[in-house]
Every structure is written in structure tokens, then in C-alpha cells.
Image 1 (spheres, rainbow, N blue to C red):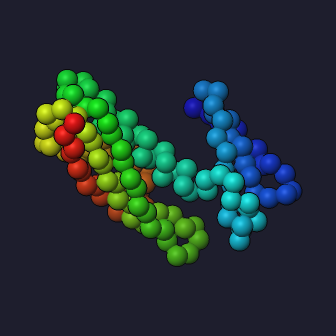
Image 2: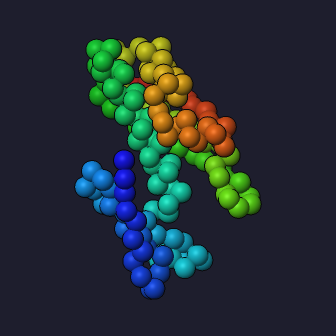
Length: 140
């Protein structure tokens, strides 16, 4: 896996990232840090990646179990250390999964499997942060 990140130039702190799979993401800083608030912060991108990784796992596990999953949303809330490096110290994942006749136990198992076995992003965050999760199942 590879990527390239390029600074947008002296007018701010905008960075354009190109992934090895041919996609582009943009990041920027807060105005107090020299940025122009035009895109997510790099640390927000880490949370986005963790949420995407975990949601991907949950949907895949439920589909493979032949469950009628129709939606999956994960909200993340994180706290960071007060001093540099300001690593994440706490991350909570809140999953809202919808479907027809979707057993709560199956969703909880999928979330737990993602956390314990499959999600590389969560595993990395867990090196510095207390990681927790909650699950809500919505009937369609």
C-alpha cells in the first residue's frame, strides 16, 4: 500500500493525498494553525478511516451471514491527549444498523468481530486509546 501527500503551497496548510489505488483526498488545517478550513483535518481522516473500516467489516459479516442488512452508520467520538503528540486516548464507535428481522445478537457479534479480529484501523487506535462501541438496531 502506498500514497503520496503534497502540500498545496505557501497560502495555507492544504494537502492533497493520492492513493496507490488512484483516489484523491484533501486535508486542511484550522485557521489558528495556518490552514483555511477547506477540508478535514488529518486526525479527522484517521477517525473517518477507522469508521469506514469498522462499518465495512460489520456490513460484510452480516451479509455473509445472510442477514437482511439495509443500512449501517457509525458515529465516532474521540478524545486526544493534551500534549504532543496528541494521540487519541478514547474513541467510542456508535453503530446504527438497519434491516429486516435483523437479530441484535448478530449485529453485536459482527461489531465485536470487527473490533477483535478484522479492523486494522481499530487495532492501531487501540494502541493508544480506550476503544469502546455501542450498537443500535433499527427495524426497516
